[in-house]
Amino acid sequence: MTALNIRDIGAERKAALEAEARAEGVPVAEIVRRFVDEGVARARAARAQEAWVASARDALAFEADKLDTEGPTLASFRHAAGG
Image (cartoon, rainbow, N blue to C red; front, top):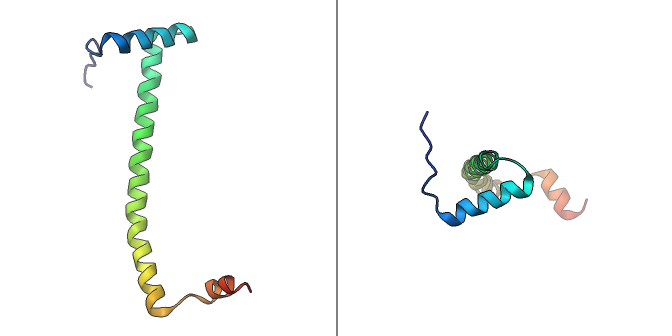
């Protein structure tokens, strides 16, 4: 576990955190925990999405090559033709 020191976050950020805590009626520590949790969740979701896009990119390239060489599947052809 790493010790966390937020003394050097700047006066404006501290004032904003204090104002947010007052507005919600909770301690500043609770606001900071919530913001950190939300930030970590967004970072994890972004990494998961990037990983999905990277894996999908390879699959889409494979499908494009297959379409070029074999043409559309019968179901795709019927759907595109409106039938």
